[in-house]
Length: 189
Image 1 (cartoon, helix red, strand yellow):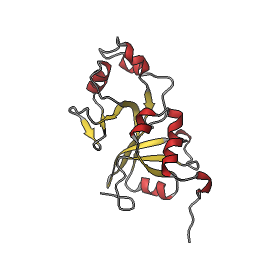
Image 2: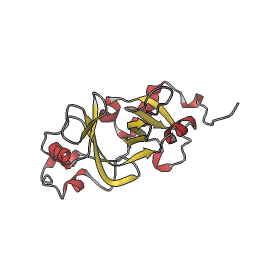
Image 3: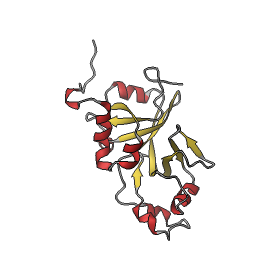
Image 4: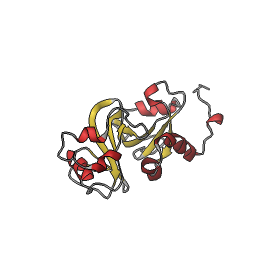
């Protein structure tokens, strides 16, 4: 398994640093679902889609008559496979096709999880993302060394119970690092 500083980053947050050049990742918080010798995969958890809602997604499903779908949001999970849906959710929900990340968080990508959410039988906490981020082997490690990302412990509270516009700052604050004191360039001694 590829590890960073002796540890896998699976289950951690990546907080985008101000110098990250990709505008779509500006002030992003990414939850890493996997990190190993084959690379890494994660989802942006703080960027709601503005032009597409959960109700729009549910139209072709036999669940679109439920009014509780109006308060469900879709997130821009990342630039890859933008039409593929994933549900990050609390780990008490476990069905075929559910991937347990740790004892608190799991991810599902079947239509069953969407139906279960609509019927009130889904995971207690969830975040529906379209698309994802992925890194080739050692690519993420290189970006971290380049100060593109800050690694912080993930937080159930930040992921599921914090307003999206506050998630980046709260994740950054959880690191204890003051960006005003942080060197934004890498150098060579």
